[in-house]
Image (tube, rainbow, N blue to C red):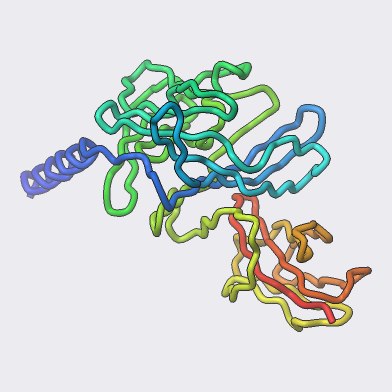
Length: 296
């Protein structure tokens, strides 16, 4: 019996190692990275934003894939939002070198964005690292793997359990500094490519795309809808308790905010005009539910 168990363990170990030797290339379409940025420097900021793959572009005759940020959702201090939306740069990958190269906006010079050839003791470097005061750099302390979409992907871990994941990037966020900063923090909330979602395939990972269309959502309900003076927001998913409810008008302007503390929250019309509005419910992990409501 012990022999069988040992052989089974040996087989699984060999199988896992064999899978991590298969290189998983960086996505070139249908992918998005949802990120969050916190800052306590000057004023409190909590920003949620997505990085998505846009149209191809050409620089010096070389084809690159553009990266876009359609919008930011600022939870605490909209007046502190100094981040630009739109074009964020472009990238190309070399699958033979297992590297991704990035060209930042306004330049035509390449920098290494992701290097999937690192060894223990190497420092993970990214294009923005040199422009930030890094308190603690990301030094590879171990090489592991993560199971995603039925396959194992190679993962390089740091002392603080941060990771560089093959085909995804770092857990700081795709274009974020690859180190710890003073009074600032960047973090990757989730990555999505087609139907593949990291880290939890059961959680939503829809990118912020600036378009909020009505959709049926089984995790919350607003009734009555339409309403005149008040309505009740009911949350059926406990992961969305203590979340931020944000209401937008048809021009994309934020007209109302409220914290959802329990399963049932009363929404009052207040001074809102009659019309169609779009809402977003954002929890502490950056997961989002959205839909529409009508005020008569």
